[in-house]
Length: 104
Image (cartoon, rainbow, N blue to C red; front, side, top):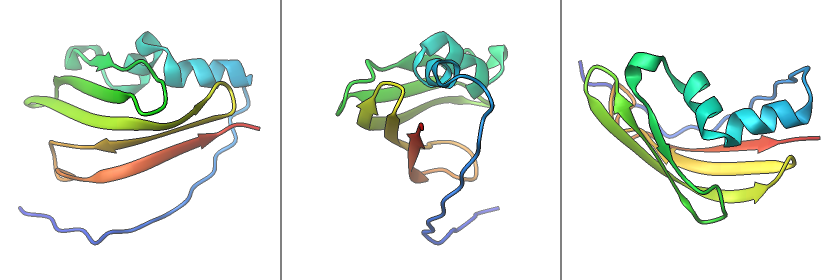
C-alpha cells in the first residue's frame, strides 16, 4: 500500500514530572537515547556531537537496515534542543520533520 501524506504542522506540549537534568540526559546521552528510541534487537547506532549544525545519524535494523539523518539546529544545555530528521523506512519514508524541546 502506498501512503501519501500532505505536509502538516502541529504543536504538542507535555509536562514531565522529573528533574530537567534527567530529561536532558535522556535526549543527549547516546546510551539513554538508544533505550527510548528502540528495542535492543534493533541494534541502534547513534552518531552526533550535539553541537549546533552537527549531523545526527541513527542507524540500525527494523525489518531492514536503515539510516535516518538529521541536523542539530539549536543546542542550549538544559534549556533548548532542536533538530531535524528524515525517516528512510516504513510508511513515513522520506518524512522530514523538526523536533523542538524547550525546558523551563
